[in-house]
Image (cartoon, rainbow, N blue to C red; front, top):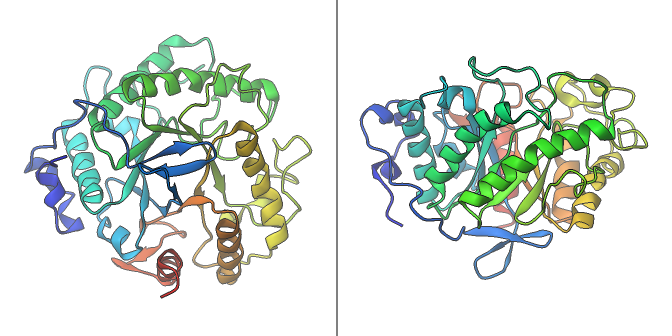
Length: 361
């Protein structure tokens, strides 16, 4: 497919100004067969060969798109915020869409597979948050579907745009109880309508989803929630610090002793074990195999100021390789303690990740 002028960008630093100067590529006239799709529990290419996706998370507003190539990544999870793209009920922001066009076009031209990670939080100011994820709240879901359909139609003609995330880490805004099967089923039922809408526009794409949050609810009754599984992939987010067995209770639906104690976002000295890390990852891995769909670790990582980050990296990479899991590391952008880039260049963890993706030789 012939790409527009945005595909010829040579410098990531130009992306911030490009939308005002270049017209967006032609998109979405007909759904093209993606370069990567699903087959059973695997991602496969057009010839049916198994593909392991290895890459990174990034915002399309980032100036660091060229660093994706430094990482040798074959996959990027590009976050797209509803509040940015549709700031009012009546209008989509043309400049935001043009920035997204340019970012995606650059990656596609360089052969990088893209998931557009649709993020409904924060909600746009014009959306009523109360009951947003309630199963019988068609108005809020209908508002979100306008955004979803607009993005899917725009990119359904790009073979390297291999899929769309339903709603990153969906959580009920009005909790009745934490970690209950009824809440998980409600969340999945809400997403079922979004999943069906995506595949109605592009029946060949992959739909990535979290049941609830980034790592809950994998024992939910999918059939009961009306959530169909064709062309779907389970996305599990893993920032577990490996402290406490699997880290989850007997229902695999609540963190024990609690979220702060089991996650490395708040720690600067990793003390986990590879055994415990696998006990945790085995929960979604087995669920995905039971459901017969692929799994991807869509977010994982450790702080740059963690004195034992090398231990964490070695443990996680060993598990991911041993089980041929696809993944996207958090985060390319240089604005957090998890950043892989510092002052425009790969930092220590970024260099390590590049060497792991590139492999021996």
